[in-house]
Structure formats: structure tokens, C-alpha cells
Length: 73
Image (tube, rainbow, N blue to C red; front, top):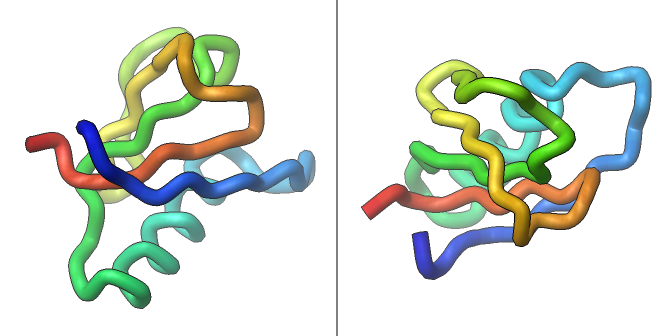
């Protein structure tokens, strides 16, 4: 993913999946389509996960509490 939307969510009461779903809903509202990839900080997940249709992957270049959403291709 080269281009995407960066989302910050520091709310500790929400789970990772909830945060990604909120960010994905906003992305869809803003850009007219659902993202299929979300990159998060390495410390946020141990294994690849999914939040609905959005695949969540770890990336060392993403800061903690940040979510980089976009299209995988």
C-alpha cells in the first residue's frame, strides 16, 4: 500500500477490532469504498488478523495507536 488514510485512536476502552472498524467506516464514508488493508504498529498484534473485510497487518513503520488504511494493491 502506497497511499492510504492515517487514523489515530488512543481510546483504551475499545478493542483493536473496534478501532479498525470505526476507521474503516470513516474511510468508506469519505472515499466511497471499503478499505481492504489496515497496517498497525508491530506491538498491536502478534499475528495477522481481520476486522470484517479488512485485513490487519503489523508494520514497524506505523506508530503506536495509528492505523494506516487503504487498498492492498
